[in-house]
Image 1 (cartoon, rainbow, N blue to C red):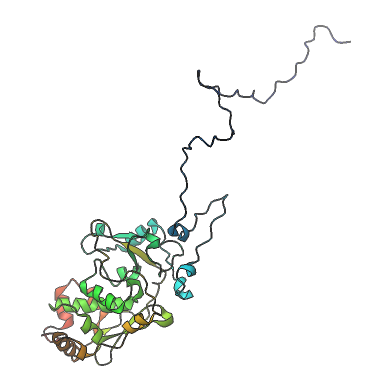
Image 2 (image 1 turned 60 degrees about the vertical axis):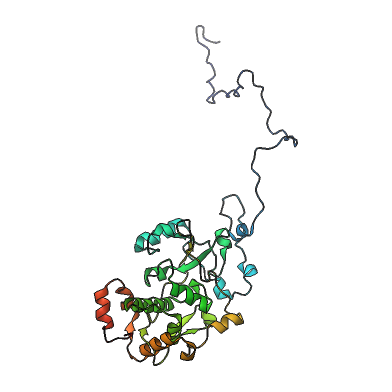
Amino acid sequence: MARTGATPKLPAPSQNPPPKSRKQPPPGKPSTPRNLPRDPTVPSNRAQRPALSRLDQLQPTPPQSSAVTRPAPDYKLFYPWAPPTLLNETSSINTEADVLHFRDKTHLTFHKEHDDKVAIRPCLPREPVCTDNDGNNGHPSCFIYATVFKKVKLRFPFTRFERELLTELDIAPAQLHPNGWAFVRAFQIIYTHLGHPASVDVFLFLFEAKNPGDRLWVRFNGIAGRSILSIFQQSYKDWKSKFVRVCCNDQDPTLLDGFPLYWVNMGNQDSKDNLRKARSPEKMGELDKENGVEVASTNTTLASPSIIKFEFEESQLDFYIGLPSFFLS
């Protein structure tokens, strides 16, 4: 028998909280059922995705955890003339952060007046150096290797001599080997220091442009008996796969005028003809012929790195060149 006076034991309360009631709509606003089919006669306020352009096709889809990424574009379809080594020459500078890091780390400037007059942009991932303006929304641009800014001290805008030389050889800036750019820069510095305009005819009288073949990049060789500059670096290292895209802006809209911007197919016969032997004196004007022959007869070879280093130090250039005994009286 149960003891009298004992209090019956009640069940323990549930540990689960009571279910939340569904939020009621405001007064006067009817509740709308979910997942009902949309009336096709009612226009949607959702933006429609435009059709893919060629630029979209060239850009790989950003990786997502739950989505299948689009494979990298096959640039061989767009540039069938390019050899595999050229298609594999891509840049590791792929983000704005990469550009800022490169600029801040090396304290670089890119324009002779102010960097606001030139736009330096990263390259698309896996974008070959031989691509055209499709990677820049159709706007003019060109590729420049970072080392040409850093070591050779090339700056925009290009001089008249630089534009004319690229046009004469029919090559884009990225097609010229950094040692070639060093010859171009040192030659200009000497002539400017001596008060004479740099001449394409005289330069091509002293240097021979070599067809790159499998090496991709055009190089200059000093002509025997006419060489006035030593090579910048005998073994130029750690410069490939590091280039940026240079674009113009409203502050200098003519920045990229007057020279080839995009990689030229060197297998084309017309391009091969542009890389011919050294310029013959018979094909030069009288003043250029006189200067070229006088330069070649000095038997003086100057170091390209030193000339570039002393570009803005007049007294050092005077001492190093050895005025007035050098040339161009």
